[in-house]
Image (tube, rainbow, N blue to C red; front, side, top):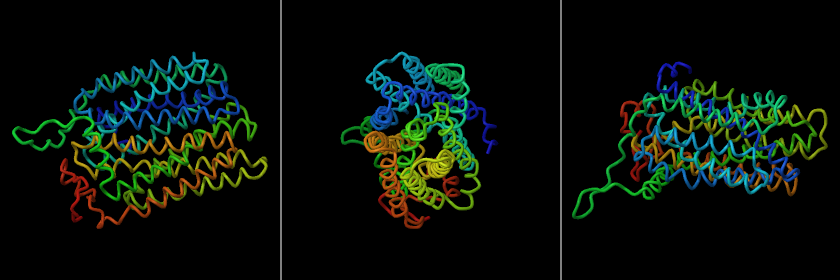
Amino acid sequence: MLSVLRSPTYRRLFGAQAVALTGTGLATVALSLLAYELAGANATAVLGTALAIKMAAYVLIAPLVGALADRVPRRALLVSMDLVRAAVVLALPFVGRIWQVYLLILLLQAASAAFTPAFQATIPQVLPDERDYTEALSLARLAHDLESLVSPVLAVALLTVLPYSWLFAGTAAGFLASAVLVRSTALPPPAPARPAPERAGGGGSRPRAGTKALSGVRLLLAAPRLRALLALDLAVAAAGAVVLVDTVLLVRDTLGRPAGDVPLALGAYGAGSMAAALLLPRVLERCGDRAVMVRAALVLPGALGLLALGLAVPPGAWSWPALLAVWLITGAAGSAVLTPGGRVVRRSVRAGDLPAAFAARFSLSHACWLVTYPLAGLLAAAAGPAASAAALTAVALAGALGAALLWTEPERDPGHRTGTAARQRGSRISRPSRTTSRP
């Protein structure tokens, strides 16, 4: 897997992603503790609302940024968004009211919604070979796991000597380091998009940003495989919302454990995700995307169902290790669903459409989180974490079963191209069309 780091361009980009996500992980822990300080037992409602604002920014802004990504210098866009994110997180320790938290989260995630799809669309251009790109997806998953494994461990160490507000300074440092690494990297120019059809009486014109953003959404809704990908995102969002929103309440109130155990629980989730990401390149070579992703998605409602059953009885000595085990399984299954998603998108659209397709996928997948975050938080605050886990179990099961039904076999999927055929065609990878194509 590490052989892909021989590319100096990708090596710098991966380093930028890793340090930024490590800082983001510190902010996740700090935001949970800030919400608990401001709202007490209602912390899950505050945290769920804050994360819903984050998802709303992703849903509304990401498609437009993806449509404009080929009109703005890619490096300048990425660096400027890192600087904006660093400035915003430095302001978070000084808030004293809940509405101020919401406002700063909106600004922070608007910048992230601009950064992430542009970054994702750059990687397939840096690594055109599919094997390299698959390894890069696994490494990217590992970088994301730094947010929920290495960052919590670092947070535990820092919390022993510093107040939690200093964790936001670590986040800002991560964004600044990311900006420096991206600034020092020569990025390839964006791939040309499909030319616009000629209009009567004149040549073709460049499509408007809104039209291009909608075209990205249409690309994702055109093929059963890509619609199934969105159902899988719903299953992951249901399970992930319970972990990220309810952990602070489960650890502090239900189990009565100290604040330092909050990052440890989140670290178990990250450990499972990292273990799955390390194994996936070899597993995908043998089993294929559909088999791995759908089966892993079916594990998610099972894990949440076990959590709901465990919360229905009084806690005991077994409760803390059981919570860690459930989070470990949930992280592994979620990683097995999410990591191959970039392969599925890449095989389904033309190279010039990658920014719009990744931005649309980023937006629609986060629309799932926009539903599950407040659902998990409000249910946990109003009816308890057991009710929250039970409701999100049903949502995860619906997403997993929907994906199994939507994702047809390759020979019946009109947008399908095998990995070998995709490499032979290069940038001519077929996007989903209205006509059935032969594998």
